[in-house]
Image 1 (tube, rainbow, N blue to C red):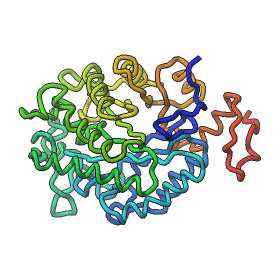
Image 2 (spheres, one colour):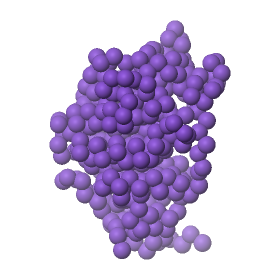
Image 3 (spheres, rainbow, N blue to C red):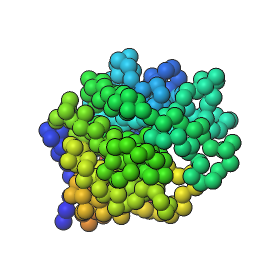
Image 4 (cartoon, rainbow, N blue to C red):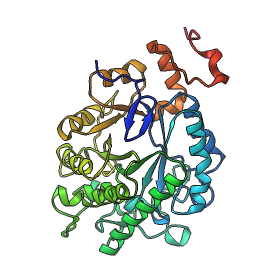
Length: 369
């Protein structure tokens, strides 16, 4: 028997109490220059009270230019870090590990949020900003979308832009640690900037950041190295999209190469997702549909992994761990439906926890049928 859902897991000197982790999920609910609102306090706090081992904040922009939408959280300023600190403290007070995903949206930045009546890129004159990417290739062009349905063409990044992005990630890591986050994650998935560098669909460079998979991985590796140099003992994860799901795109075998490089650079765990860099990718979803990608990377790259994707059941999640496919599970949409999933799962699996909130203890072991 390998590790199970409620076994702790240790990274450096930090122990995460179980393997039920809350995946980062954008809320698009910042109302004032990247600052959190009461919604964020409620949203993240409920998962810690609900027994999760790790609560990962949503993609949090390392620069104003790195936001997906004008309503994204940010951590490019000390003011933002101070405003996020109470959220991290509440999560920690309730026994979960406060984590934060550091992100730059690249060519998918400056878009209208999902709650807007408009779609596409926000014009510069209407509160938007110039986007950047590895190459001047618009998102949507790879799928043959009409020009009016593509996002804005990004400006191809210069070497100075790349150096600035690395420094932005490292500075965001500094602020995150000062704010009380005990786990950091670099976002290199879902078609955002670092995934754009990884994928040959969006990266057409001919310098040291383009061409081979090693070159396309270079920026993500350099960001991990920069963060690790400043924070040698902080658990550091990287989320990747293990495939673009289309011919000519980033592949699982390439993702395995990237994962080996990231491990060597100091990453402790690869958080394995898929897709996001192609507008019309034929993704075959289903329960645990991304677990095989994580299992492949775990085996072939020799690195710890988390698995995500339509995990909705306690025995399903526990089985992935018992079978040795992943080292932890990430739950996203199911946590929105059931933020106390971890407490319920423990009951279902017959595991006694000593971290039920005292306010909720009367519900422990209560029959559900």
